[in-house]
Image 1 (cartoon, rainbow, N blue to C red):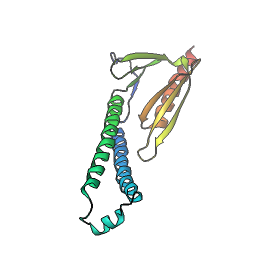
Image 2: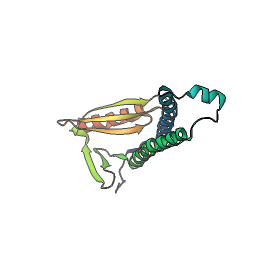
Image 3: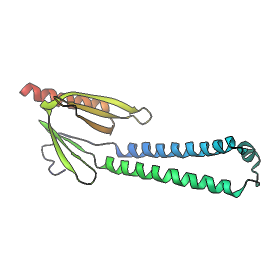
Image 4: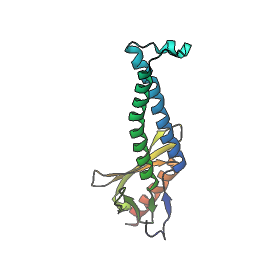
Amino acid sequence: MKEQKDVIKIIKPHKVLVFSYLLLKISLFFLVIALAIPWINYLAGFDVVEFILTFSKDIPQPFFDQVGETIFHLTIPAVIVLLINYLMILREEYLFYEDHLTFEEGFIARVEQKIDYQNISRVYYEKTTKLLDLGRIIIELTGKENKIVLRYVDNLENSTAFINQLVNNAKDKK
């Protein structure tokens, strides 16, 4: 963002909680892979339960190669996608002025957008994670099907009330 004077409030994603949330997603992905591969091999005729209980050394080497290769091929793209998503979230910032809000869109080529409060028809929030108390604030624009979504915001109720107050004040002045 270029100029931040006269800014009333800045709303950004909660970076620590977002990182925790994405780390939780990756961990769950690893868990699903770790549980799915033995199950699939068991269905294919390999006795996984016996291997776990006896720690048998009679398991053929190709089994371990297959598991390692599958985990590598599935987790590396997932980690890359989540990392790119996190880097995009780090750059999100919404600046609220007395009569408008500004934000930048795009990952590489950043384009600044300016929205007058009079063009906003509705502001509400949705909780996306109960565990980490994060959610998103949705700002619907009048006369357009567009929505502006502020992702991974904490303190949803207060932030939404603040935005609604700015919108109502701007409409009252008109």
